[in-house]
Structures are given as structure tokens and as C-alpha cells.
Picture 1 (cartoon, rainbow, N blue to C red):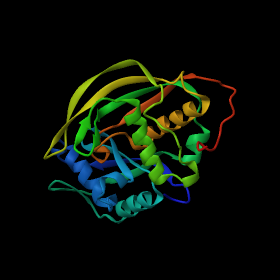
Picture 2 (picture 1 turned 180 degrees about the horizontal axis):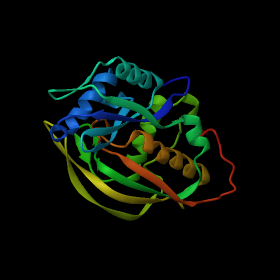
Picture 3 (picture 1 turned 90 degrees about the vertical axis):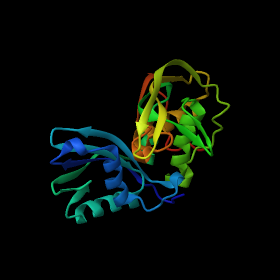
Picture 4 (picture 1 turned 60 degrees about the vertical axis):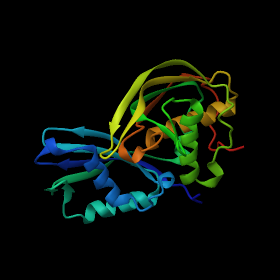
Length: 253
């Protein structure tokens, strides 16, 4: 657990590719992981893969980093690479730019107390615990993943202490299906769609913690295989509990 705050950063890597039809998610993962993946323990990775957009002769790869060390490694690797290899192709034209960034403190300070959180699971999400798997986006799994990643990379005095499983979070709306995600040698099924989490039965502190953890998912994704582009999520907060409530810079007791 770091003593100082890391910066949460969303990047866009744009690569010109002569033969775009041969591009796959495996290529995107290979490029990014070769630059930043030095810790092969699945639970401690400080990056995730976001959307991959194919254009006529280029590909845009969104990636997220949640430690300063990983961000520095990404920039150094990109700057020092004479070319980027996509399969058998050498791509010499590419750009890397910051799309958005935030500190953990700013994420807390700018988060409102909303009575509901709407999550859109853009790419399939699956939760893994040992040999067991679940595609059900239960609030304890979704926000539990967010808290676990937060605990790894946020300053220790900002770590939330909250039992998620027993919280009376309701799901008045869920609309989705399962979808297969190809990871090269293996495919995974996961949930895609929209879920609304109703927080009206929670107290003010519980609402604040879940709002922060929800917004954090915009930067880190959720579930297993996020470094392969699974678990990309968009979070919106439509209903504010108390617009005049003072914002706190801590979410710990």
C-alpha cells in the first residue's frame, strides 16, 4: 500500500497499421503488456485495457494506469521504441496521449452523494474467486473489486473500511445478456448491459464510499481479465442525495 498518492490516468495509444484487417485484441494486449506488465500476479496489475477502436488504417487503444511507476514505464517504453510490432508488421507511426487523469484525493473530493449509480458494462465482466466464476454483477462483487484495487494503489489513509456484502443495496433495473470474449487461446463468457444500484437504504457514509468506488471503476474496470479488455464500465450518477452536503477528502472512519 503506497504512502503517497498515485495518479489515475487514461491514455490513448494510436497506431498506424498498414494491414488493419489482421489486427486482434491479442495484438493490443501484447503491445501494452510488453511495456508495463512486470508483475505477473493477476491481482496486482496496475493497468487495464479499455476500448479498442479500429479505423481504416489505424487502431486506437485506450489503456488505464493507476500507479505513477506504471505511467512512467509506459511513457519510457513508448518513447524508446523504434517501432511497434503488430503480428508480423512493423508500425513506425504512433502517438500516445493522456485522455484524462485524477488523483485519488480528487476523485473523493469531486464525488457527490448520489442515491443511485448506473453502471454500463461495455465489455463482458466475469468475477473469479479461486476456481469459481460468476457473471452476476452483484454489488458486493462489483464494489468489492473496486475496493480491492483501490486498497492496492491508494494512500493508506484513504482506504475505505466497509462490509459490502451485507449492505442493503437494491437493483431496481438490470438489462443485459452474456457475451463471449475471445482472449486468443481461451474465450470467456461475461455480462454486458446496464445495472442500476439503489443506495437509498444506506447511511450517508456508506453512500459516499460507494459513490467514490463507483467512479473509480471508470479508471480501472471491473472483474477478471481487465488487462485483456474485459470489464470496461461507464458509471453515471443520476440522483443526488443532498446537494448541499459538504464533500469529504477522506472515506475512512
